[in-house]
Length: 120
Image 1 (spheres, rainbow, N blue to C red):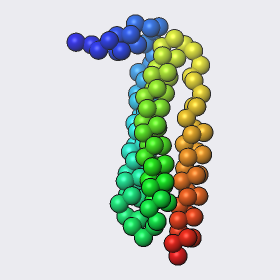
Image 2: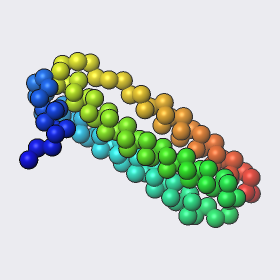
Image 3: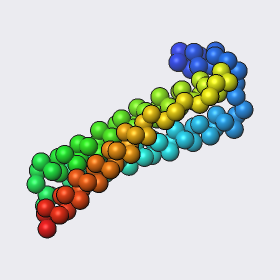
């Protein structure tokens, strides 16, 4: 039995070249791996930065965990939007999540630098 979301997607437009669909899936999986890396980093920061004050450790950990979760959701939305665009012969959507991840990683790095400088 085909899920309703899949039926909805397949009923739109025409099937794109399978190479494009497979490339879209590989991109989705790359975003998911990045999401899992951020989540693992958040868990690792909370578990192993024991010499760091609780507030700083929890801030860094929470930031990484929230970014990982947001990226996982954004990866699915991006995959769906790209697949719909390809089936409808429309331009691919822009990556709105890039700013979130770019700034988020930058902020996490600054927090980590502050943690390192303040703990030494």
